[in-house]
Length: 125
Image (spheres, rainbow, N blue to C red):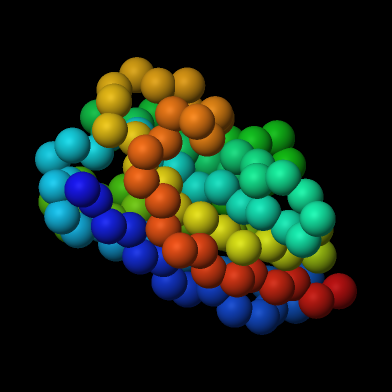
């Protein structure tokens, strides 16, 4: 099993930046692609960004591309999401996720086996 714990959420104003972090523990050798998803009130969970375990290939939702940057440190078993130029529509609970199989479709939440408890991000306009 893998445990994921997010941190770094909070309340910011539009245009500001925030950095989310996710620390993994447990059987981390079974982790492959790691990703961030978010869920706003009354909406379905949606893909934000993901990064492969090797090679560092990153994927982004169109809505955050050029504003958010995902990175990971395999030695420390962490993944981060740098969020810049935040907008009110970025307000959501952000979840860290990890897949236990390689070469998954990075944007599809069904391929992720481990999930964190989520961290709230609120952007005021």
